[in-house]
Structure formats: C-alpha cells, structure tokens
Image (cartoon, rainbow, N blue to C red):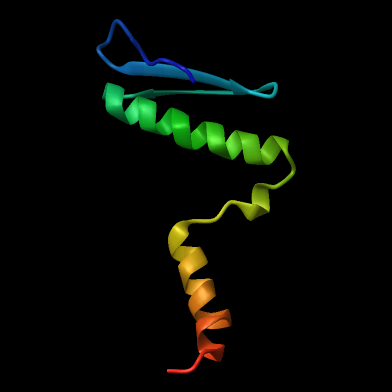
Length: 75
C-alpha cells in the first residue's frame, strides 16, 4: 500500500503500482488520498487480472440476489 506524501503546496500526493500498472493523484487531504489509493489499487488489480468487468458493489450484488434468488422463494 502506498503512503500519501505532503507536497509543498499543502496537498497530498499518492503513487501506487500494482503488477506493473502505475497511477498517481494529488488530493486536498491525506484521508482522501489514502482512500483513493485503496480504491484505485483494487481497480488496477482487477484490470491486471483481466477481470475488470467483474468489479461490483455490494448494492449491485444484493439487487441481483433479490431478482434472481429471492423471487423463487416462498413469501
């Protein structure tokens, strides 16, 4: 995991590398930079593994479960 570094302008810069794929960003707060780093690392990992289309949110999974599984159960 990358560590955010404070710049001379007072913003926070973070650089990440996952399986040879690199990305960086400059954000106003350290917390935003750390959160961005975690999210972007997950995206790069999925992209590097060829599973970019499989990245889903919990809300999407629950909605799909409700449509496909719960509809077949008794009320």
